[in-house]
Length: 410
Image (cartoon, rainbow, N blue to C red; front, side, top):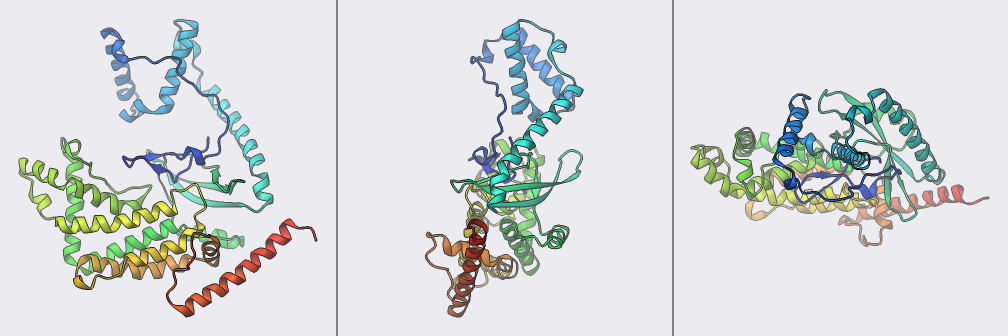
């Protein structure tokens, strides 16, 4: 199975792989033949199992999370099924060594690439294929690797993807000059990741406000220090209604909402806990009203990211409406002209024009126009609207000619 990096989240904000969007490659699966309650184990085997798991973690330098790794559990389940069918066996007699598994990996890789090539033949012929480049870094050695992901659309107009085979690896896509230069050399069409551009908009605006407003800078510092204290101190996080979130390496654009929302929801409980520890000064420096306003404001942008990233449908048509929706979020409240929220709105609106809108293309406008759910083009300026309509019309004619050349015999 090929895993997608831009995965959905479950209700607890944990990353989950979008299995329905992955290209499924047939592999044998292991299903337990019966359910067993560990409480039915004798005390002897309970202790033996705990001791074996502990040695696996400590002596093998594995993380505690590895005990819940689905692949390890599947491996153990396979061993149990072998024992159930053949009786008590020595693990050394049934386990394969690294050489055999290395050869098996090469064989599976060859089978996989053959199936993928066959799968992509038709999308390539119909010019319904796109690719993305990413740099990912492994958590342990911090080595960086280049990957290439292929996206294509099936007959049901569902967006599929393949090639990228790591589902739990942090990946950050940016405007890397090396990527931009490489694509320009081969005259390939390049489109910016608009989710990343939105993150750049928020990140730049956020830093600008910290420079312009000392109160906001102190607020951000206090929030960061409080999160660090709670994460490093034992006995706090599990007592909170919602654990305090940290910056996300895979989804940095969601962090602005998740961090402040988790702190807002746990503010009262955290105040009680810190008072008991004589550390209440850490939270009293954070204005709860401003915290609530920022949480509410940034939630809107979090939904925009969902619209741009977490979907198994094409999202090209969502780019332009998202710009106008975010611009609408940034309308100034004249009753609170000097508020920090208004200052954030001003800076976000500025960066939207400089970073987001400049990354859109004619194809984004055409996609929006062709989507029947978008009856209006969200443009107030009449001259700009006429300009875009003309551009859309010209672009559709070009696309029609391309389709005629590709699918019709002259």
